[in-house]
Image 1: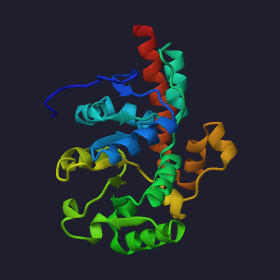
Image 2: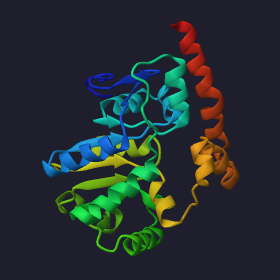
Image 3: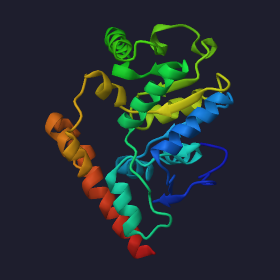
Image 4: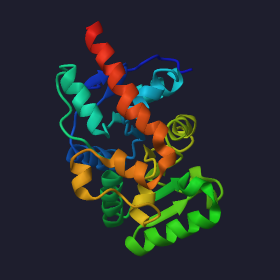
Length: 246
């Protein structure tokens, strides 16, 4: 367990004891650029409703989320919940992980950042190499390496490390490794790289605008039914219960 429980200092609002930052994509990218420019380490997470549900039982996970320098809401359900609970300030903008990572890679290519990735494609080296190849075709001037394919990553001089192990595992990996290299930014990104490199297909834009990405994911991968249940049934119930408590 962490030394300091539920460090919510600086967070704009909280939903079910998880702190969130009411911000915009522009401000997040500015924050990342400033931290990298000053060689200051940082840690970003992108919670969605499933994160909130899982953190109710996994208190270590909840604490790590609450210690992040930025906790960026990724999910229409969080916006609805904040409005329903009457939280002030409300969530300004939903910032999806895939869109944020795309912008980061574009800036990283322009600014000559060295970026590491870890956990992509379940760490399968053959698939990781293919993912790197696709990234380099898409961003030909980008300096990017996979930690699974090198030795002694803390000495490689990264400005940013994108961690793609998936919910819970990626945040815990960051917490355990964040002090191994000074001045490095860590961002938990889930499957964002899969979408950017064509391993997985994102929902059509109209579905994203309506907050129906969960339905698209379910159609593409029926095994995600549990996550849909947590997001569309359990999370609303927990929010409703919180409303009555207040």
